[in-house]
Figure (cartoon, rainbow, N blue to C red):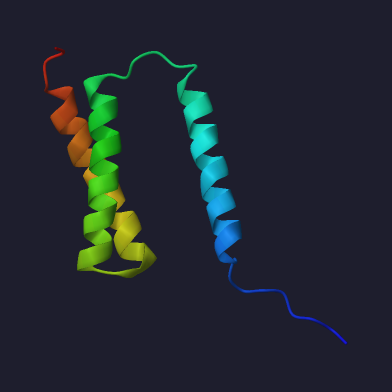
Amino acid sequence: MLTTPHKHFTPWARRLALSLACVGALGISACSSSPTNAQIGTGVGAVVGGAAGNVIFGGPVGTIGGAAAGALVGHEVGKNQRKR
């Protein structure tokens, strides 16, 4: 009898993958210097743009498009901010 592979991850597998990604991101960020305002703006813009794109347009295309647009806008805004 052949079994078909699961098309979706189980809840514990998703939590495990998310936890590993967060730990990896924290590990990588510990090795870096403090980010510039442009880098902070890019990250914040990508997150906000991705969330807005998903809400407005829905689906992965809206999320990716919103994240790209948000990253561009966030980078430009952050680049023009003074370092405090």
